[in-house]
Image 1 (cartoon, rainbow, N blue to C red):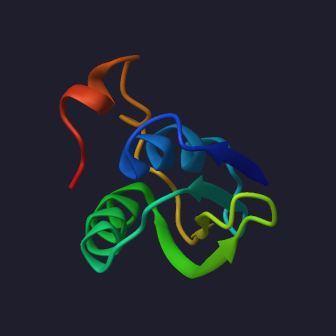
Image 2: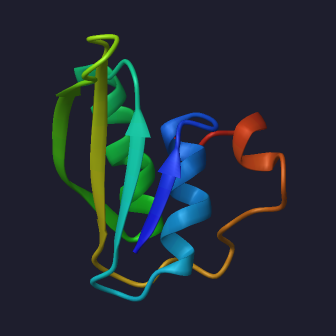
Length: 96
């Protein structure tokens, strides 16, 4: 299992996390704002990395009442050998 806080675009986080998992493994991306468009872009990237979005859970933080999302990505097949790309490349050229 891998847990990633919002340190970059979701596709960038997925590119760093999914290659480290065994098939069947799970990564959770912790995000603030999340939309249907974000979902489509992440699913496109996840497909290229051997993953799929398993579920998205919306949460409300207890103190600030802010909306947060946990996006669960499951690794369903082997990640191609070219991933992850060198540091900085995923942010410059996202996988959408």
